[in-house]
Image (tube, rainbow, N blue to C red; front, side, top):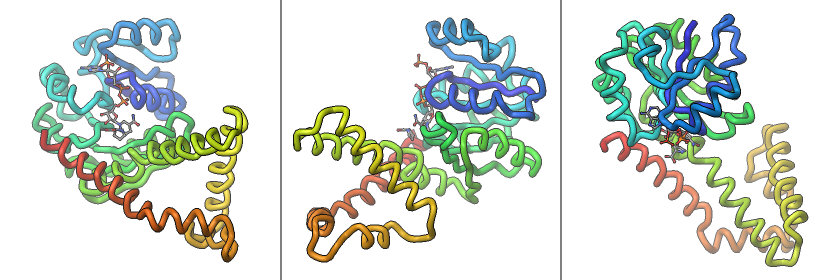
Length: 267
Ligand SMILES: NC(=O)C1=CN([C@@H]2O[C@H](COP(=O)(O)OP(=O)(O)OC[C@H]3O[C@@H](n4cnc5c(N)ncnc54)[C@H](OP(=O)(O)O)[C@@H]3O)[C@@H](O)[C@H]2O)C=CC1
Ligand SMILES: O=C(O)[C@@H]1CCC=N1
């Protein structure tokens, strides 16, 4: 099977790396294309992928095409791709907001899987939601899932609404976690800890909490109860967050990302 990735950025390169270990490829290398000459040069030097400097020589010959450019590059990219694509090919989009219908119309093809990945895919801990157009067969869907799972885990959703919704939870979500981490780091520094100690305190606190959560069926709310003693320090912190409506603000932020994904689809 020949797999082609368009856009060698954060996501495209991460997926290309993950998929290059897939048994589905046989002895074929992942093919990759980007418009940035510096990236092309580095990729050629590394020799992991078959690197292309134009679409003409490869796009029509591959079976699966991953599209991993920014949404605002999609219209001009589709124009360039349209004369070269075939209707039997499967297109897998990683782009936020861009709808299946837009891709079908832009490329004049039928088979599209729309996904929402996230950045921890870089370390094999990504989560990708995906849904498909009517003409994608069961076997194509299974193949796609296999490829997506090379970067972590995936969930199938029935409608594109849930792709936009998962953008607000998991797609953008790592940034919310980093925001929380940054806030705690800054608090630790203000309290007088060194850079190194602040990092150790914060990163181990996150890692330990996630490990506890993953190793049990207990909800985060119940874990909070296990940390907080009555009238103690944790309760003082949680009360401060509740007084400042932090939970609602985080939910508003997730909805802002969800809404923006829907908006991007209309631009
Ligand atoms: N980053 C993330 O955490 C997530 C991103 N996504 C989605 O993934 C997609 C890619 O994002 P990300 O990887 O962060 O973006 P990047 O900017 O890191 O990567 C996109 C790459 O595509 C290149 N490019 C631009 N136009 C073309 C073109 N016409 N043909 C080939 N290559 C082109 C860019 O080059 P240049 O830099 O020169 O423009 C860049 O190297 C986006 O649509 C985003 O919505 C989804 C979930 C999470
Ligand atoms: O910020 C963005 O638009 C992309 C989609 C999800 C994460 N990054």
